[in-house]
Length: 147
Image (cartoon, rainbow, N blue to C red; front, side, top):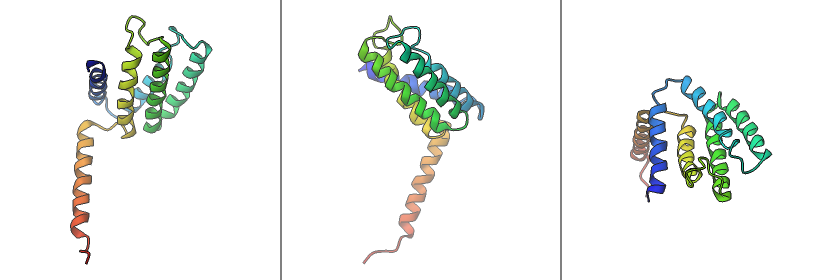
């Protein structure tokens, strides 16, 4: 159970900590992280020259992420796919931790979901949800009654 929960906790802690970085620096910082994530497997290998090709793709995605949070989310999802491939092949992110790629594959999509929200602060996300709920309730109240 801990194998599944801890990566989510790590992602939430990451989001909380990175939320302290003010915008626009938060987006730039996350784009840099995507570029770095692309190269995490290069030294451990497993896929030979494909590791370099993946790193190049991640640098391109990170560059686009400098202007778009969506590309940051895409980058985390691409890294998730790479984590899964490495876990299946038996070449984990941290060689001494067999499930490190597995954990990363759970952690990364949580961060990607946050990136797809525009990297908003947790309190902004809660305020956004409340505003949507209020707007939906107001729309239901003003809708004409059906016969």
